[in-house]
Image: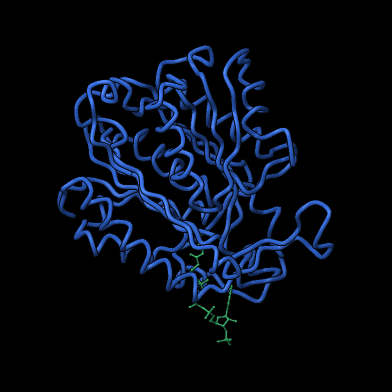
Length: 329
Ligand code: COA
């Protein structure tokens, strides 16, 4: 939704004050996958733009990656864990069924107050979590919220299924939101959508107590691609229209990083030159709920995205779920 703000709501609007990312140490290239699977660097690169991915090893997991990304976001904001009142983690790959990754991170950061919970919306998870955090701040329930996207998709993949395992990677990204955005600053709008009728296009069986077969991600790639192009285009139009903006007003697109062809299509729709689109899919592959905050962290840390820039984020994933967020940094 977008906001018809009263002065009370304006006072509580959320601004984004810090970002951070964390990637597993181990890098696996396309050629390394091709050495044990009937695929090739050429096939993966031309279909998806992916050249490599980071995968967890040793004691790395969802909580440790989320904690590291959160620490960087706090550092980047010049804040400490004592300043945080809530943590929302978007993930489909928690280390445990419960407690949530969010409360494990709360403990790992040494927080002694506040609350945390996880959000499950697959690759759209970060946009969903950002929207929830914005609502918590606007409603006065929390003055500062850490929003984290973290995934260890390597746990969900059938490493013998070349049509899916080459597409994903592991990682985490985090942002810190705080109340008190100035006029036209911070989270300007979020829009969320889902269509459960399309749930079987992209899913993972394996909930506790059912589906005794192997836990593995299944995807009808072509169909997902088709829905991504249509739904993301509609989501971008919706975000622009709600805010009375044109494509040319957007300074940066930080899209979900699933496939370079989908990203290029969205950039073309907005008439955005490629140097205004943050791309990490080549190095990170699809890190699901982590991909947007990881990409944002990279572009803020290397100085591309600056304070005052207008940033459009969009994502689509299993559910199907999709949505957008428009943020003035
Ligand atoms: N290496 C080599 N060949 C492969 C392969 C791989 N890793 N994976 C599939 N193939 C083969 C298929 O078996 C098929 O062969 P066939 O024609 O002999 O049957 C051929 O390549 C084409 O497969 P197809 O699935 O139709 O390819 P595609 O052009 O649709 O590309 C995706 C596949 C997955 C890259 C593409 O559909 C896609 O990106 N979809 C969207 C995925 C997405 O965004 N998902 C996440 C949303 S969060």
